[in-house]
Length: 184
Image (cartoon, rainbow, N blue to C red; front, side, top):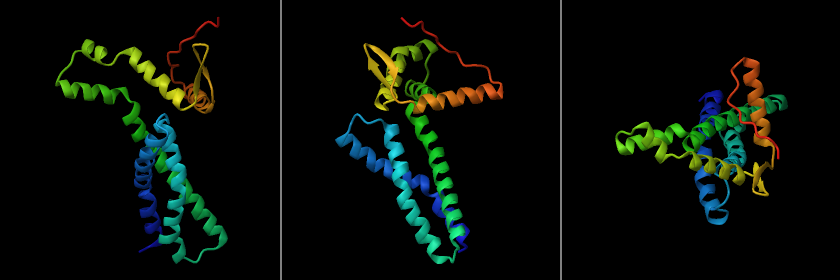
């Protein structure tokens, strides 16, 4: 089989590797660190997956080839980029199942067969939605509570949010609704 096809097949299986790691790590974290965010567990799985993915690329492809050091470096860079991009794609599927309101609304309508908008609002209250998101941000250590108020703890998601807002502005998209609070 052509080495590029072998490399493709190994790399295209990387989301399956991340899923398998996520299943194992989730059970471990639930047992020993139950307060750990599922998103943190996902990131740990992607990071840990670099080792078996590198071993699979070497075992299936590299060991059968005669490569110059430069070619080996470029193959490693390519494999690293593809693995991380496929993991990123899988993250969005995972994230949608974790956080998307649309998925929850569709599930509620499916269970009841039909619902009015007022029924959906009562099933999926604003306070519950806000508390779930705030709890998730606290577990991810992006927010912390201080004196009964939330403050930014780590800045990773804050920086990502600023980049997204900047990209929206650069593309000319209308600004999202923003809430401003007076400091007291």
